[in-house]
Image (tube, rainbow, N blue to C red):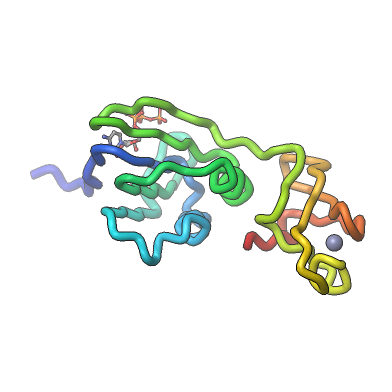
Length: 150
Ligand code: CTP
Ligand code: ZN
């Protein structure tokens, strides 16, 4: 008997693979899967040759927007997004952190105008690894530890 957990292949949709284990549920959160009606599999702490332990999220019938891909890049920079069509991997995208980030992240400065008024956040990316960003409005610099994805 093969003692191995296999997660079903999907027919059409998206597979996010190579998620660092500790970011698996963050990725699920980002995609706001709570009300979804199609099949979703979330697995974490799977063995991975590349990154030790990994997470996978499979979503039948869903294709990601650029904004969702950008958010995933912030939580899981080494993730791979696979677009599945009729059981085949049609496209394999490496996520990448953009040079500018709009929305997605909350400014950590409570006095920043984006936390006081209804203004969308905007950051320039100073460093991608480790992630370091600067608020366009209050110029506060934020590191990975300060970054809250919304
Ligand atoms: N997958 C799936 N359903 C399909 C096809 C693929 O769930 N119909 C999943 C696979 O289980 C894998 C991911 O999509 O987790 C990417 O598939 P594939 O490129 O075939 O796997 P690998 O070659 O292992 O990917 P990589 O090179 O990115 O490690
Ligand atoms: Zn700010």
